[in-house]
Length: 404
Image (cartoon, rainbow, N blue to C red; front, side):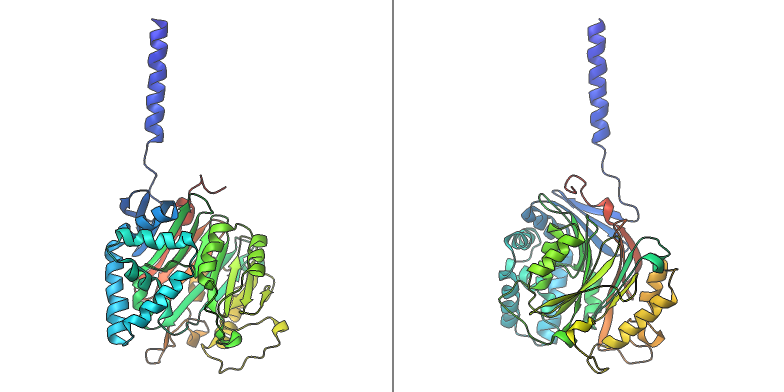
């Protein structure tokens, strides 16, 4: 009888433990679960899609394609077909050639993502590639970045902010803004913020707390470009997948050559560093002041020997000066709310945000904005006129089993 009772107790414990560990993962705060497919989940924070993907790169691609299948098909029609081909008159053959050239340079693991998407999205592989090349069909952008820490945050955690600027139609495209969280079988869990269907990193944060944001560097680096190099924005996605520390990040920049001139603002929980990255060499630029780093679209490191004039384009000098002034004005008081207010300040009001008030629709627009706190692995997103600031707790999505 005693043995029988013990067996019952053991079975009860096993059953109870099984029920305990079988409980579904709690829904991240502020996000709503929309749908699931295979190992992937689609959440939404406000109107912003959050893809939580797991497995091999091919499996994550399948999850991406299925979970956003309606959005991807509509976005392809609205952006690729209706806007670029019909409205702008771009040749479908030329767009296809551009897209295939970009795809051909991808490492196989990222090709596997796009191939997986095409299996489940309802788009052909060719159409998926053309949507992926969305930002190659338009003119260059003019973005802004500011990173603060130490005395500027009152010795609270580092905060990074960025405006992502493009010409006006991309403001409508940004209604498809997506946070894609990759939890690969091998690699560092990471998240990128970009348009739906686009597989490369212009803004990202990984589970190691590495943050990066890409700015155009054309005013200083010129138009020199190389078609026989992996595009920088693809290399940056690899960086997020492969590295965890600022030292490793520095090795990456000392090893990798870019295809075009860019400025990459980077940070971890302790400091911000800007890489002024030309196709022929780069500079690792430290803070403008201890605890304050600002970058727009021109190289600032004095060792370049470059003197910028006010007419170099993108209002890059003005936006940089404004952000530096805002940083100094708010020194010691910058938290996430204050950073939101700083990023929302237009150029006419002493900030860096397009368009200028009182003007006709500007040639450029701030199409979306991102704030990141690497220490807590949290980001905030805004799409002007579509979605006000909304929080995404990336730590809730990063798979702790692969975060080692």
